[in-house]
Length: 97
Picture 1 (cartoon, one colour):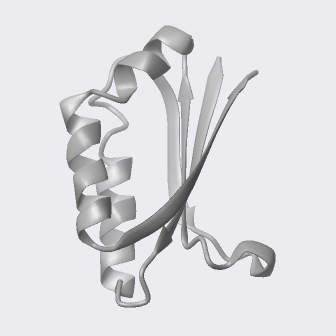
Picture 2 (cartoon, rainbow, N blue to C red; picture 1 turned 120 degrees about the horizontal axis):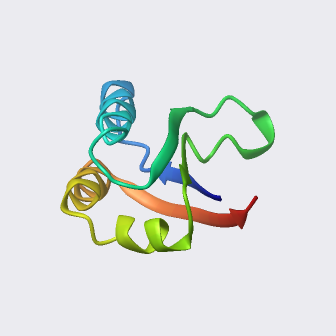
């Protein structure tokens, strides 16, 4: 299995409502993409990394499922919304478990 973890930093102008919409749209991917075992999203409340407001985590069956996820149109639509509402930076980590 593969865990794909993304921390996203947004602009100071990004609203709380927009952050919640990012989480909502991301969670909606759960049953739309093959190879997804689990999917979680939420607001980061850790003080040590508070500049990254949203955490997204997907567990995939294998590396092939992860490879298919990136170009998937449903995923690309969420990624486009994240950019639209002010994504400044992101950190991506993939680990095999």
